[in-house]
Amino acid sequence: IPALSPRFDLDHLVFPYAERLFGRILVSTAEYRSGFRVDSCQLWLDSGGFAAFNPSSRVRESAGLGHLICADGTSITPQRVHDLAHTLGAQVEFTLDFPTRDDSKRDAYQQLSLRNALWTLTQPRRRLVYAAVQPGQDIMPILRANPDGIGLGGLVPWARDHTSLHQEVRRVREQLPDSLPLHVFGIGHPDALRVI
Image 1 (cartoon, one colour):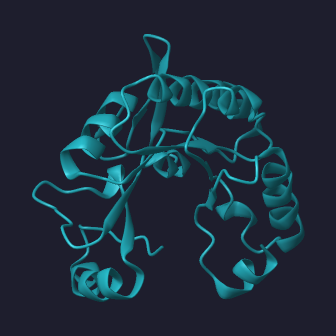
Image 2 (spheres, rainbow, N blue to C red):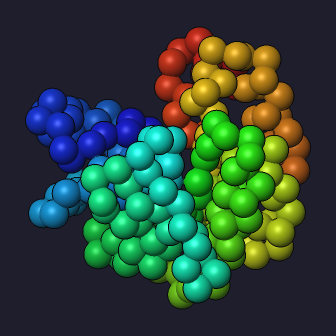
């Protein structure tokens, strides 16, 4: 599934080909721009939590949920992702998660990611909801909330470490029922795909 950004002119040229060749595209909430619409293929809406990798972004807790303040000042909340998925008619919505390279923040970020996932999974579902998880995260609490799929994020720092990449994908896959799909974020290079 190609990940495209409405903010890049080149991606606008690619949209018709992606729609025809793949039938679906992935767009991030962080990359969304007003007026963007996809009418002729399936839209998968990523929460945009990858923006937490930017050192200028901030993760905050509010009313028990995690919010992301992006480097440009844009605020991404579970409610915003949920509402945007409805507005755009997305077929798949991913929950707001917070990847990090900082081990001292990992537990707190995973707890907020879990709360966001559980909140989203309790909302009325008009589309498929994939719960986003991070490397090493316990996914059993999420599985009990009956997601339509799992999105494994936070793997980009491991993109060249094929052994760790494979082990993490296998760890998550082994915990999932056979019927539950697994989407792996950010691993588009053919060498990485062959490892998975």
